[in-house]
Length: 326
View 1 (tube, one colour):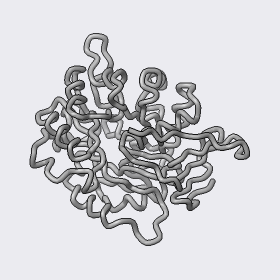
View 2 (cartoon, rainbow, N blue to C red):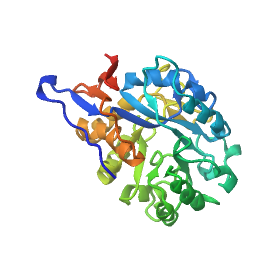
View 3 (cartoon, rainbow, N blue to C red):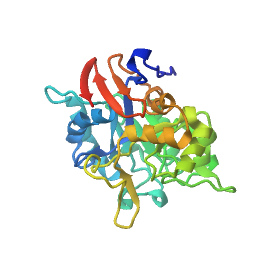
View 4 (cartoon, helix red, strand yellow):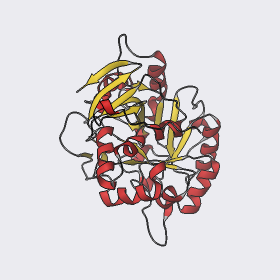
């Protein structure tokens, strides 16, 4: 699959970095008071604000409890944006669940988590508007789901899983090409039972995504992941409805369980650079050219996000039009 690489802006931009295609957030649940799983039509309100974070394209995400709203979500996407819309472009839905290992539910409602069945999967394809789907490969029907969905053009990511390395390898052989939020809601690294996380770090056939907000994954583990899987790593925000509304670093359930991030993808880029010592261009690639390549999306030549030397978003352009300037 073709890689779409970053290029540094020329000298007259005084150290700025132009990110061709802009940032592509493939896992975001909402923002500015909106939650896509409650109201799929809010993708346009959120997309209009995402440009402030350098995002030009995104995959709005339905969590397990929102799976029942998929028909409405597809209708919203297919109907297109409201008149005059100038925000980030939703390129399809990311279904995160409900086909998980219940022991790794994380912030998802365990009561709606279930095995994958033929009837559940019926009609899900890239053609209708589903681009990405996260599931646990070891559950009943998991491997069959991976094969069937991959055949329909859906990128399958392994997550919310207690898979062993053998089960993870079976998932890859069946057609999975990604891993969802590395280290979170999956079997952790253990010297005798390494599990899915180890497979995502070491198998060159898969690209792990990661939430680099400084809380979901410790900086030291981000650094480890970068050293093992840097060119394959995909940054995601996993932002929730409180994005843009709070200074709290993360969202949590009442019992303290992490329930998503509250910062934008641009902060993840800056954090990745800080935690690993990589260049700004390398960090930006993890939020732009890498997800584009894995999702099979060719960035628009008119989409550009420009960063200053510290990684702050200075300008966002979509289809050649300036839609945000700081």
